[in-house]
Length: 114
Image (cartoon, rainbow, N blue to C red; front, side, top):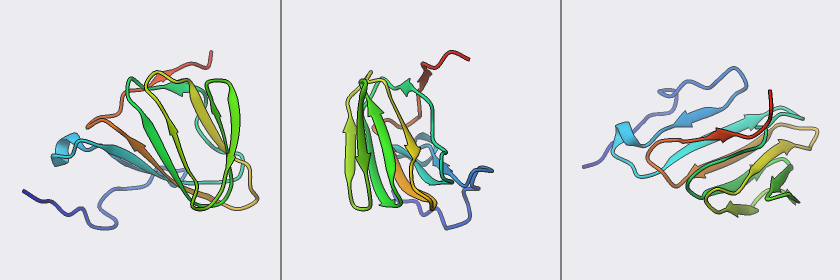
């Protein structure tokens, strides 16, 4: 089996992020292709599986299990299952980052009181 999802088939959100959930496509992983504006990024949350980020361009500040980590182009950051985490674009330009979820569908628990 194989499947090709062509550029443009997955519509970006208003913030510029493309979401891929693997399950409908026969894949065991899901991911976000993030293209965030300065200051943007998800609030504190966790997943029952690991998450891996690859920073393609820009600068991000990750908070993982209460520790802050800065990452730039080419850096890879990994958190384990159930680890509270978030990231924000701390640069002056857009942040391009790949957020890989080790799951065929995304499961997220938001931890920020609303």
